[in-house]
Length: 354
Ligand SMILES: NC(=O)c1ccc[n+]([C@@H]2O[C@H](COP(=O)([O-])OP(=O)(O)OC[C@H]3O[C@@H](n4cnc5c(N)ncnc54)[C@H](OP(=O)(O)O)[C@@H]3O)[C@@H](O)[C@H]2O)c1
Image (cartoon, rainbow, N blue to C red; front, top):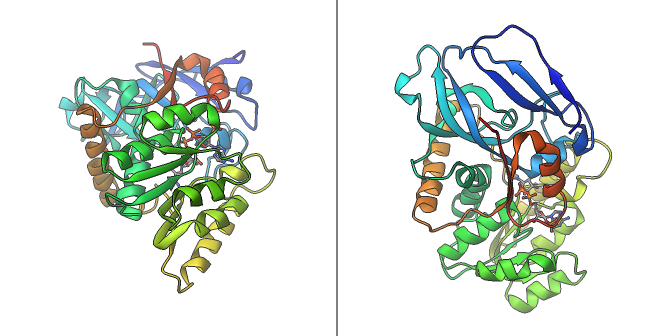
């Protein structure tokens, strides 16, 4: 990464290193900036970031294609794990020195951040920060979609698209742990890894993929988890067994299309709503992690519950974080290239150097 900007705005305390997305750029257009962090205000905590994930969202954001991304320039970074180093007024000072996680949507790709202390979820001692970071937005999304939306049960069969990805492989692991049969789509280079997780792989580039799924599950599947959207969503819906649920949660198919970031999502939701009106026993829903955010207390409590469950599974070794690579924060361009390469299984994690 060639661009290095130093912001000399007055601040107090720490000099933070941040990765800035200045506009629609190739990964190499990401900039590294240092700036003086303000002291935490009322209700805030300052966190020294130990690990922060690269998500599909940043692939969309650098193309200006994420549904509600902030105006450029901004610091990306969907989630982070770190140690609290200072707190503002009204925040429990015993948080200082302890490890926490936060899902921030943006801002995480930094050495030090200010966050609302109420958004922090405790991470048990002994859990590696990169391991925990791998299971934040991925873990919360997968856990909720499987248990709260699809309500999948042991003995059922589900189809997970993009099963080698961050959310996808977490879904596979959570489901297999509950003795749910999993068919997972991925490119062939990832099929052995999927088999090792207990999933039955199919190739998402195979034009007859739906026929392969039907061979494996002639009665249809009880749930499909589809982050691809586009025209393929029709096939996902058709693969459902009676009473099955389509959980749509992304529009990866339109990532490279020029135009509105909102239109593909809204068109998809309209289609799902229309399908739900059909009297065929199928359910179709769009999962949005941020739904319910307006009721901040309830949203935070539910997230704390879900992440605490995920961390407990991690601590007991019942799910294994799939880390594709650990990359220094200042090499974010390489990390994004790698995440977009189609060669990785699991999550690329950025590690700030303190
Ligand atoms: N709705 C929500 O609240 C919510 C929350 C979190 C994430 N998400 C969505 O979840 C998705 C996965 O996120 P992530 O961070 O796990 O991404 P990721 O780690 O980059 O994984 C993406 C996966 O999608 C696969 N893929 C890419 N294009 C595809 C296509 N056209 N057809 C089938 N598979 C394709 C990739 O396969 P290859 O590696 O073979 O290319 C990879 O397995 C994203 O679409 C993201 O927006 C939604």
